[in-house]
Length: 334
Image 1 (cartoon, rainbow, N blue to C red):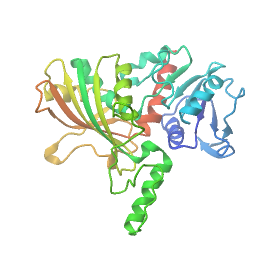
Image 2 (image 1 turned 90 degrees about the horizontal axis):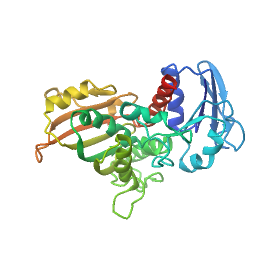
Image 3 (image 1 turned 90 degrees about the vertical axis):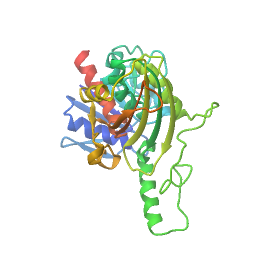
């Protein structure tokens, strides 16, 4: 089993390496790719040193079984044919192919079987906020069809990459030193001590592309007419996204039913004991694999509504881990 990582020097690429090791993924050969700037860098994996190759239009992917790609949408589009032409399955972390009809969009806990039908040898990894949300929606959908969802996201700096995390850390230091000028390059404004209700570019309907991804991707993954209205906010948290989710189902469900469904669902951990101040928080859940839920309660405006709070590590379940889970499913079923 020969595995390639494209974009290995980025935050998600580094997490891919770490998770392949932690989960003892059954690979026999590993090849790493990056930009011209990253080429020549070396990384250790299971005691062996690997050198990053420059991604080029050649036959370097001959013999590769699965390519885990996290190098941005433009790179994915440009190199998709180069990566897949010899038979490699490309699991792509960008938004480039997510809504293409002949490209499955997969979250293994929700629609794993879709991965088995990839006529272009491309499988898309959904947006991080969508992955986190649909994992928690699936056990509810199993009880009663979900009609609509309202969600507010609280997205950490990690969602914009390693350089954004460094920028937030530097801003925090500069604020502590009471510097007059705080540099902001990765975000529209200073993120430290601030909230920015703007992720990705705005569309004609007033929603951002990030918010529309949650609408469109959720419907594709869940094969559903579910309607999603999202507000996505960047918050001064280093890693792990949070979401406040309101769900309306066709049938009225109790909090006890929802809680039991969450507790019995693979990939979800319930942290919900208000009396002991027990609820998920990103500070304590960075580096974890699961989607954590808490604050489960009835929606006071709707008898068929439920609301809850969710936290998950964007770099792991929201990106790298989901891609590797897809690869693991393919190995078991193809």
